[in-house]
Image (cartoon, rainbow, N blue to C red; front, side):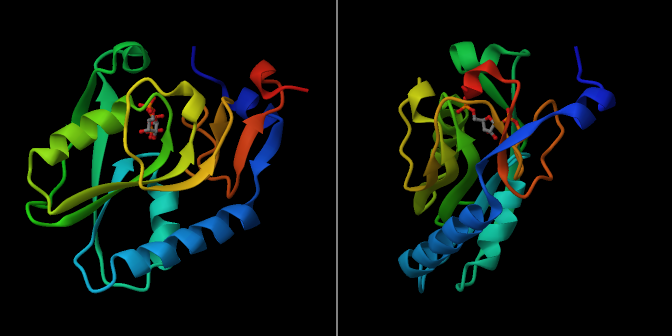
Length: 188
Ligand code: PRP
């Protein structure tokens, strides 16, 4: 059942990664990417919707020319993505990536199934290079082996939201990564 606006308003949120730490790490990643891709073509591909805030902040920390594009994915059925990894593309790129240096920008890698599917698909389009930059790596939950080239933070197996990530489609606007205080998994 969908969360009500009243429940949303009553959510007690603890901070897992505060705004200053997020911004500092994004700045570091931007500097590293600017060095690594200096003098080269670069196309940032954001997987909607959770990666949007990370993408826009990361772009502002890049000192090199780059392009952006977006794609969206979904489970074949509600809840199926985590159990068997079946993911379908619901919105494809507008850009032809053949011969381009593609950097996937993701908010979080959890089981890894989303990333695995997207990497398989984009790999068939013959990019010059295909790398991954994710803000949050929930490594304990991994089911699919996926290469991640740039990681913002390793995080524990807790339900997190904010900074683009949602709780029932809300709270994406938070400038920090939060955990619900009532979440039993968030510990004492
Ligand atoms: C989240 C996140 C990744 C995916 C990671 O998307 O943005 O795309 O889950 O999970 P996985 O590693 O277990 O595949 P979500 O389905 O929450 O959609 P959203 O980005 O629109 O919030």
